[in-house]
Image (cartoon, rainbow, N blue to C red):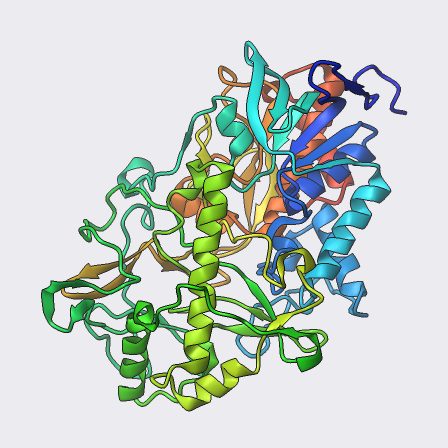
Length: 559
C-alpha cells in the first residue's frame, strides 16, 4: 500500500511560480529502456515512482530505431527485460525460446525474432507497461539543477520550474546527466591500457586478415559476414583533396590530428548515428530528402571507397553502406557500416553539451545521414545496383510521426562514465575476473565503433574501433558496486547506463537488454534502501540477491 508521506505522489503548486512540486518514493531520471525497467520495478514493489524523461517518448533507443537489437546470449537476460521482449514478440505472433541461444540468419543479429519489430509497437509496449504499473511519467522534464543536503539528493529542478523530490534517485540517462549535476566523479576519457592493465583501451588501431584478398593491405581493417557480403570493410584510401598532395588539405569526413600511440589515453567517445526504420511500401513512404546545404563533394571519401571496392572486384550492393534487417510490414532496420550513418568526431561534444547544443549535434548527424542516402541513390559514381537498391527505400509515414518519420533518439553509444570505488574493466568482461555482488549479466563482445577517422601512414585509418565478435567471453557478472557512487559523493543515487566502467569494458556492457537488467536491479536495491533506512552503499546484498532472483534476474552464468 502506498500510504506513507513519501509514498503519496503529491502535486503542489507554488503561487509565485506556478511550478509543480512532485513528491514520490523513487525518482527515475531518463525514460530510456533502462529507465522504464527501473520505474516499473519500483512501482511493482509498492513504491510511488516518478519517471522524468527530458524528451517526449519512452524507451530510448529500444523504441527509437534499434529494431534489430543485439541481445548476446538470451539465457543471460531475465526479469523485466525478458518480459518486455516477450510481450513485443507476441505482437507479431512470435514465441521466444529463452532457454537456448538465438540463431542468426543471413548475417544479421542473433535475435531469434525477439526484436524484428516496428518501433511504434515497441513504444506502445513501454507505454502500456508504465501505465499498468502506475508510474507517474513526466515528459519534457529537462534537468537544470540537483539540490543536495550533504551527500543526499533532496530534489531535482527542471527547466520549466517543476521540482521532483524523492527518497531515492536512479540515473537512467545515456549521458549520466543526473550523476554529473549531482557532483559525482566521472570521465569521458579513454583511460589507456596502462591504467587497468587492459588491451583494448586508449588509442586503438586494429588489423584483420582479409580472406577475400588473402593478405592484409597497409592500414586495412575489415570484417566479412559469413563469407558473403562485406558490410564493414576498409581500404587504404587517399585522404587528401588532391590525391597524394597533403598540402591540398583533408577531405570532408576525415578528422584532423595526430594518430597517436597504440594504447595511450585519449579523449573521444564512440561515433553516434541514427538507426533508421525505412520502408519499401510506396503507399507508406515519405521520400528521403537531402539537407538544404547538400553538397556531393562532402562524400568524396565515400566515392573513393566505392572506387577501391570496384577495383578489387567487389559486387557492391547496399549492404556495403548499411546493413539492413527485415521488419514486419515492408520495413527495414538500417544499421551502419564502413560509410553508413556514423559520423566520427561529431559526437565528442555531446556528453557535456546543453540540451540546445545536443539538438544541433543531432541535426548535424541527420543532415549527414540524409545527404549520404541521397548520394547513394543519385550520384553517378555510385554503382547502378546500389543506386537502384537505395531508391526503393523511404521513411515510413506511420513511424516517428511527430518527427517526419525520422527517429527521435540519436544512438548515444557512449558518454560520461561514473568513476566509483569499483570499476568494471575488460578483465571482468573477458571473464578473467568476476565482479562481486552481481546485479545482472553482460554477454556481448567488445564492440567499439570508430572514434576518429584519421590519417595514419598517409592513408585513412579508423581509430578506436574494436570488435571481438558477438560471442566474446561467456556471460559475466556486473557488480552492484559499479552502479553506486562513492559514499563521500552521494548516498541516495544509483547510475545504471553511465555506470563505473572503463572505456573498453563499457563497449561490451552498453547493450540495451543489459541496461534494462541493471536498472531493474537498481530499483530493487533503491526500494530495499528505503525500507531499511540506509544508503545505497549500505544495502545488504545477502538480502538483495534473493529479491533480484525472485524478480527473474539472472545473476550467475552456469550454463
